[in-house]
Image (cartoon, rainbow, N blue to C red; front, top):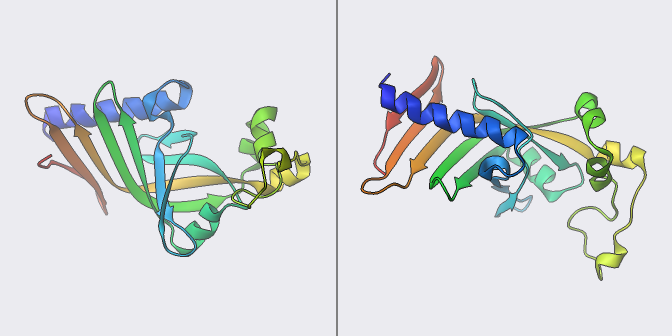
Length: 184
């Protein structure tokens, strides 16, 4: 493979790994897009929890009561957009979502992170005001917690740089990842 192209992708992998351990890393909070249960496009910012550089797969956490979960059960296709404004670098990842329970990941969460999944009413439920949000119990929180694994199928990496932007695409094939330069 062309050496500059490989370096381009090596840097992207390094940025994803950094986002797992550095709360200030720009790629820590990608925009995640999927379809709602009604079939409408919907996007939200989520926190990246882990990544596998060999497969370009990523993991996030979600609440089993959310519309996001219902939408992904109907259509598991998902897209993520990572943006680093300082580096002028964007990574778009398209893949297939898989929802699962994982007691080991739950146990490793901080008490503050666990509390997020205990609140009532459920995410997206209409309320009169913030004072209606209540803390729930630990058992309810554990039952509401889901791991969202995304198996990458295609990647698009764009570097906005004068005098010429650079863009590359990677597509997962039966024999691995095929990478090529594409026009920006």
